[in-house]
Image 1 (cartoon, rainbow, N blue to C red):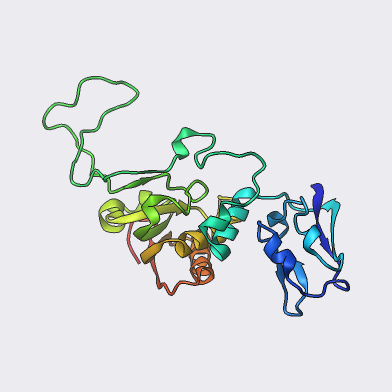
Image 2: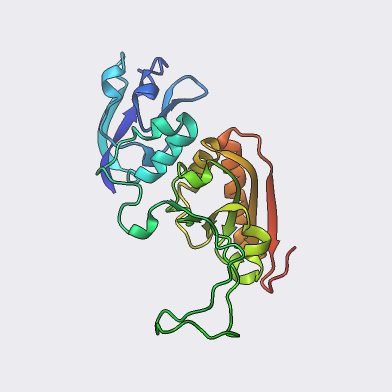
Length: 259
C-alpha cells in the first residue's frame, strides 16, 4: 500500500539518537555504524513525531509503497523493549479497550472446573439435566480467557505469575489427556504457525515473558513438520525477552502419542 512513512538521510544523520527516544512506537534505532534506521515499516505510523528533535534534518516523512502500520505488533514490540508503561503510549488509530470488537476477547481469569465433572448437555437442544448414569465430561483445567495468541494481552492478570503453556491448536484434539497432563496449573496461549498470521507473534510473546514472572515455559507441538515453527517463535521470543528461561518442548503424535 502507498502511505506516509519516515525516510532517513544517512549522510545527514549524526547518530545523536534523539529520534529513537522521540518515537513512541520504537520504530527507530541506531545501527552498527551509529546511524538511525527504521526497525520495521509496520512500527512507523508516519506521523513524524521524530522530525522536530533531529538537529540535522536527516528525517523526512514521505509517501511511498510500504507495509501498513500495525498497532498490535507495535504495542507488543514496545512492551518487549521498553515495558508496559511505554506500550500504553503507542499511537492508536482509534482509542479502544483491550477487548475491542467481540466481547469474547475480553480478558478474564477464573478458577478451573478442576475436579468438578459436569454432565454433558446439548446446547442446541436445551432440556433437563442428564439422568444419573449419563455420560460426564472430563473436568476443564482452563483458568483464563482468551487463549488465542492474537487475542491475549501480555498484561493480562493471568500471566503475572504463572507456568506458561504455548500449545499448537491441534494438540488438544490429538492428546486426549491434554487438560490433565499438560494444562493443569498453567496459563495457556494457543497458535498455529501454519494457518495464523504470525507477524508480531515473537514481539507479543517476548512482551508477555518480559513483563511477567514466568516460572516455566512449555511448548506443545504436533509431530508434523510445519508445527516446528511454533517452537522457533517461542525460542526467539524467550531470547528477545532478556529473561533466562529454559523452554521445554513436547511433541504430540497424530495418533495422540507423546514423543
